[in-house]
Image (tube, rainbow, N blue to C red; front, side):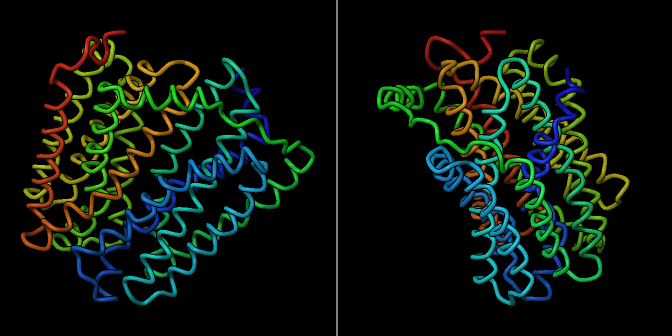
Length: 394
């Protein structure tokens, strides 16, 4: 059945469109040290250039999802692809912090529209087991994109950092196949969610169990993005790493996450429960973060990045699995969407929290602070709450 689904040209196009959401930060993070150096930016503020899109993504994705249901998903997807390319490439022309930050925020909003429309189309195209398989393909595609785009951004940006921003123009190449494949499909809006369902969703999100999971996702994402934002700066300062090397290190993190997600995350969740697996992953992330300031050789840094990815690949599936288990089946998609928003909010907050540490201390203290956040997050999960703990369904 998997091969049959993968032959569906509609699926392949939508997967390609969805992968663009991983590209927003992936192609810029490797060249951030060069941006800081050539534009003479405050390093403490510069990290926001990699994370600003996370805030606007979290804000606009649900809003554009509602709009897509009302006016048709293609009417959201195609303009979002256009604005994604426009706001992305215009970043290459910016020569100061604030205009570049605004451009990064705008591409995040466009990325939210791409995610909302493409996932909405996938959700209506498939049912039952096929839909589950397709969601698995989405996860695999995003993981692969997390490996490819940092490498691509580092390689293209090795000539000049501005060239990495032109990669966002690839979104324009998807418009012809999207129009060709979906133009005969009905864009009939679906009915809005009933008021009773909205009320029930509000009750679910106010549950202490759900609130703790959302907070955990937010804090874990702060830790995750610390590597994306500050590892390139650290490598540039300590070993004079090029943008290509930065891309390799960030891709190594994604490789570790992909391997454990595919082959080990489910076993760890069954073996230790959701709480145990998440705490184990957070502990591994904290350990690798604490060792980064002690490493000076690339052959030491890459294994550390892979191990960090292993922790990441253990934590995120466990948290989203627990969130899905606690959510009523009819509201599962909405609750998971809120969880995604919490994760993006954490990515946005990362350079705000850790940028302050960098401004008053240094890069080693940034990694120690991120490790502390991971440890505190693990302890938060271990505090008993309610009648049903995370992972009791295991």
